[in-house]
Length: 379
Image (cartoon, rainbow, N blue to C red; front, side):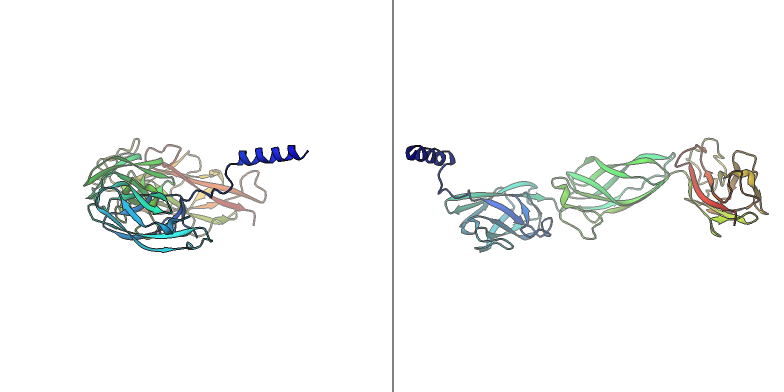
């Protein structure tokens, strides 16, 4: 029995390998004060760490035995690295994890791309950290965006600046009519210009936002809308506005959206843009409207229409599919007033009604059509 137990113990030790071998020392974390700022030990891994042309920055590198490293070098030109300090126990870590602080100084013309940083003589080992040199570029201007002749889903824009090659693009602070999302993609870029395509999830009449270019070598480090210019962004961004054919921007009820038999409903219809004059309408194609003339035609109706009648100053018919009205040139808002005669059939206590209004070729979909609801009640 003793021989058997001894043999089993020997086999187990051989299978487990040398017991005295320590865990392999290496870099485990780094703290750049940017993407890693909210993490107690910093980011996991050995980079890449984003650094920008022209900047000087200290990066804290952590791991077993890194504090014993006595040599440091970096590949390529335009970047120098020196040891700013060491700690036996790294910030936020426990015994066994050391820290070496590396000061990087980049020239304004340091070649963009990845570099290897080698830590030598680290208790018999060498460690490697990767940095990415980003362009210190700035987008300074955007070419004028012409008025769109139709409702748009894609628009190409051109930005100019300095040192903006290898650009990526992001959008922030967007506002679209109708509501939707917008994405940006690069069609081409060089040192002084970038052509960007904006793609909208739905056909648009009007859109605003901010377009931010960045060095596409490290897309995540540039965060539009954060309020701070983070490394890698080609400036704080440039605002854009794109205008297409007019639409109904909103339908509201300034005197209230709940009414009883005998009371009036004030319907306020607002256009996204003032109604054009004949001269400003040029270039806009509106099938079925008054292209070439001033003003902006709309069609509107109350549902259910049969229980309403017009008030003075409002042209309204309950028997037509849609009522016609043309906003005079230069105007943007109009009130329509109708009176509820009685509750509609089947509405005994309270029910919902709808206002619809359409512009352009009056199709039954956004951005041509907008609706709003109101309530009818017995009392």
